Length: 147
Image (tube, rainbow, N blue to C red; front, top):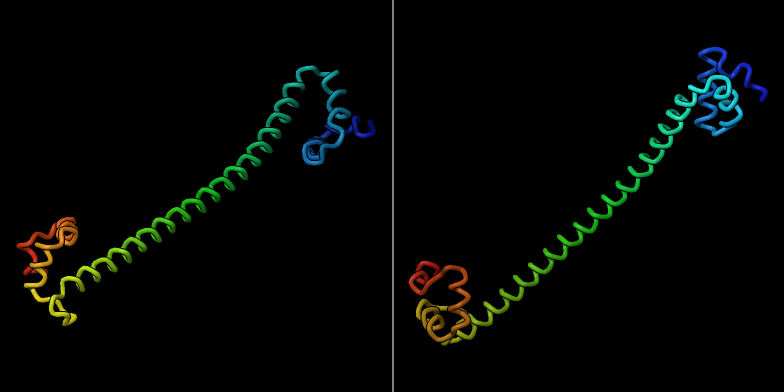
């Protein structure tokens, strides 16, 4: 190896060698094997560096994957909320149309306006209308106040 003699001669050269090996992946074995042969305990340092870099890269990849999964989850949640809102809106539209239909059916004189008497008669004669009002906690006695 051309650099082996000076690869770790100074702090600057050692830093340059570590950067070259880690970032560029150049000559890991060419530079470290001769040092490990001469000083076997240096394997601990080189293994620590190698494992640290591997864990860093794996964590970086994992962070990207988790971020993308979170974004997909938030997108799915937004769609679910929109779908529920649309369903509730459709239910309200159906309920409103049904209420209008019931009111027209209760309008005995076809004036387009309900009187209190027509409202009370509708409560007594139309069980669906009575149940709808009961579901809203409106009893027959409350109809005068609602009217």
